Every structure is written in C-alpha cells, then in structure tokens.
Picture 1 (cartoon, helix red, strand yellow):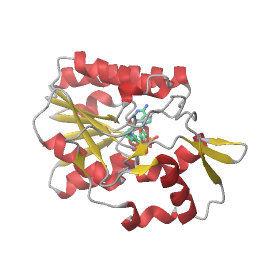
Picture 2 (cartoon, helix red, strand yellow; picture 1 turned 45 degrees about the vertical axis):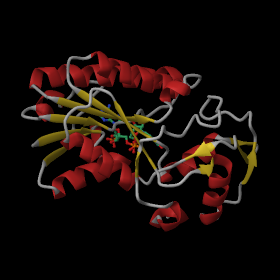
Picture 3 (cartoon, protein in one colour; picture 1 turned 90 degrees about the vertical axis):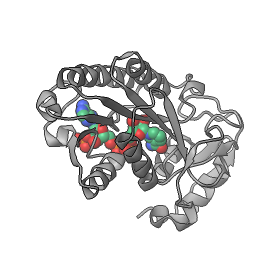
Picture 4 (tube, helix red, strand yellow; picture 1 turned 135 degrees about the vertical axis):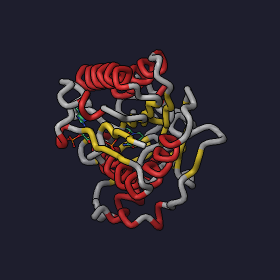
Amino acid sequence: MKIVVAGGTGLIGSKLVARLREQGHEATAAAPNTGVNTITGDGLADALAGASVVVDVSNSPSFEDAAVLEFFETSTRNLLTAEAAAGVVHHVALSVVGTDRLQQSGYFRAKAAQEELIAKSPIPYSLVHATQFFEFVRSISDAATVDGTVRLAPVLFQPIAGDDVAQAVGRVALGSPVNGMVEIAGPEQFRLDEFIRDALAFRNDPRDVVADPAARYFGAELGEQTLVPDAGATLGETRFADWPGRTGG
Ligand SMILES: NC(=O)c1ccc[n+]([C@@H]2O[C@H](COP(=O)([O-])OP(=O)(O)OC[C@H]3O[C@@H](n4cnc5c(N)ncnc54)[C@H](OP(=O)(O)O)[C@@H]3O)[C@@H](O)[C@H]2O)c1
C-alpha cells in the first residue's frame, strides 16, 4: 500500500515513514526537503499518484497567530484537493488532545480549523489527538519562560514519547477510517509544573519552574483536565524515566 506522509521529514513523520517501510509499505515523505510543498502545491500531484492513504504530520514553520492559521488552512485544503484527484481513500491527521478546550490560543485555533476542513471533506478520515510529546519539553519551557523563570499551571499532564506517537499513528493509518477522533497519551499522569521541573533537571537546565495557576499555555488558560485525554485513550508504553532522550541529548 502506498502511504504519503506530509511532514514525513519531521520529528513524528520521519519515525512514521521508517516504521511503515519496515512493515513493507511504500511510504513516501512529502515535505519541502523532498520537493513537495503543501502550501505552493509543488510536487504534490506527483507525490500522491497511486497513494491510498495520506498521513498529515506537517507543522507550521511559524506559530504566530495569522501565519499558523494560514499554514494549516492552505496546506489542508491543498492536500484534500490533491487527494480527491488522486483517489486517496483515507486522510489521517495528527492533532492535539484538548484542541477544542485551548481556543484562546492561535495555534490551537489553527489546529481546529485544520480539523474542520478534514471533517467537512468527502474523503474518509481519522484524526489522532496526541498529548504533548516528551520531545516537546524544551518548547514548552521556552514558551513559558518570563524573566528567566518558567511559569506553568499545576494541572494534569500526560505526555507521550514520539516513538509511541508514530506507532499509534501508523496503526490508525493502516486501519479503516474512523471518521472521527481517537486519543493517544503517555502511560503516566503528572502535574505540568512538576514534570517540567524534573525534565529540566535531567538535562541540567538551570531554570526555576514556578507553579502559577494563572500561567497560560501558548496563550490559553488551563484547567485541571485541559491537557489530558478522556478515559479510553490508547496509552503509549514508554515511561519518561525510561526514555533515552530525557537528558536532552
Ligand atoms: N509537539 C507536540 O507535543 C504535539 C502534540 C500533539 C500533536 N502535535 C502535532 O504533531 C504534528 C507534527 O509535529 P512534529 O513536532 O513532528 O513536527 P516537526 O518536527 O516540526 O515537522 C514538521 C514537518 O512539516 C513539514 N513542513 C513544513 N512546511 C511544509 C510545507 N509547506 N509542505 C509540506 N511539509 C511541510 C516539515 O518539512 P521540512 O523538514 O522540509 O521543513 C517537517 O517535515 C503537528 O501537526 C502538531 O500539531 C504536536
């Protein structure tokens, strides 16, 4: 089966392409680095020729409100149009647990717009909502740093290893479209501030982490359950304490 992975050179995409190839599938990475651009359309029709499934794990180069919205809307429209022309029968996209609860954030408004375009399109689809990746510790910390101190709300947090995300997305891509959303998360719950404090210590990052219930997460206020999935989410196996990347490389 030919599977095209939009964003197939990124963190999750590269793991997913490798995994699908190991399983004997024809997996193609579609990204600017491989000559395929979902914004300009360059290389898209050729990349999709003969494909049955498209998995979109691309991400916007800019997280600025207008830029990220423009990225996900244009990219998703172009992909869905090209997929219809190529006869693709399953569109899979990776999004974030709690996207609907994070709408004060421009990034999450863009993810919601992406999801809406997919749900309205005639192409059968599956949305995979993942919690934050272990690999995202640095980005979360940097976004939450004010005057050298990391300020985070002490809310529930259930991060997942990127390898486990790729495994789960691969399974969904090889299955039947759910025409809805499935959730994936890590095996353990933490408090966001405590997790980031420990994770920064593992990597010898000297920043202090302060619990601040009013601290926003990429612009959005957080409640106790905002970032965690409902019961019934698929859980990855990797515990943070056993994750080889925890020292930050
Ligand atoms: N970070 C988290 O904790 C988290 C949690 C849940 C869900 N997610 C979602 O997971 C997805 C993937 O995240 P990631 O961290 O794996 O992304 P990433 O490592 O930043 O990779 C982004 C990918 O998008 C590609 N891309 C950028 N512009 C493109 C364009 N115009 N056309 C085609 N491809 C383009 C990049 O290609 P180049 O390499 O050529 O630039 C790269 O392959 C995102 O949609 C994100 O919302 C993230």
